[in-house]
Image (spheres, rainbow, N blue to C red):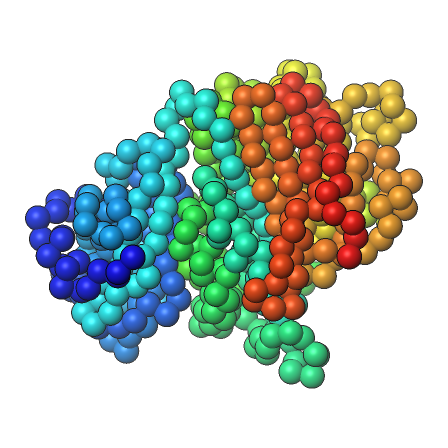
Length: 486
């Protein structure tokens, strides 16, 4: 396709109505009277928070001006001729020259293309997709990943996922790692600085977005994000020690600037929410990091906090979708590595885990599936409120957990048989490989594939090595091992 010229884009937008909304928290900081200024789009483009009739669009302009702006153009075709919306979006140093706007008035289950224009440059053309209508029983394809440490390798998994036919991509935490490593470490890529304040967190995101595979994934697929600990500091909620409040706020703020997500001005740091995906699935995004209590603070141990837990239980109980997908950060299964309790995961909060799973059991809520990050392993587990009874066969499972590996971060490599000997609810374990997971689901079944990637080069090969088929109404699955260990 021949890329549209700046003159063609300006002409295409001349007769188009303004149908985009600037996030109110940003507008208050930037004021009115936005102008399109000069600058380039070195960090790519992205879309996120897809709704049935709205999508959030993102980019960032590189400019020396303290305040500037860019024009967002949204169209039905890749040639950007059938324009449906335009907006001049303000930005400035106060938000790191990020650009963000939410465009409404779109059609459900529809593909759109978009581009950002400055006074002297045009961004790559991005592609996005709106969510299905409420009564849609259409099948879904959702990919997910976590733990993309820049120094540990290239994001070849993202380059592979970018070429997939997807409805949605989920980032399940540790999108960046706050700590750098010395040049002498022998890492595949360099990231020598630590993030401790807003300026250094912004620099960290720029470093990660320099990966071509990650930029391409963002360009082609709408995404949803939840954060874990490394977006601020490793295990920061354990209070050993507690990071300075300004550091924590800086980590959250940088994430809000670089992620295509509209920040609610009434609750700026809330990321837990329910995303309806037609009649096929309800997606629950959790925050298992920010609201933790009970670590050296004299409070009861809680991983979600009371308000979030009540919200989740209510949503599961009232969901009419076939599948209830819970996207969250840390391992739910007991003893996930076969090495004993892991206190940074749900193991460290057994009362909350028992409460959640016992309510699923008591109410007979079907098809509850956890999508998990953080662990740096590919793993599949059966879940129940009483793991002892589950392990000895005296209690049935009430949910299934799929842990989708790490993009690059090193995992705990242990023989699968050794893990299963101590954790009999485990159905698969691989702590050596890296990659992502793809989930295809409809009203009859859910199929999850684990894909491993060669992280030693940007064009590293990716292959599917495990497949799990879970029929609707069954808290279990059949496993196919598709490729031998490498």
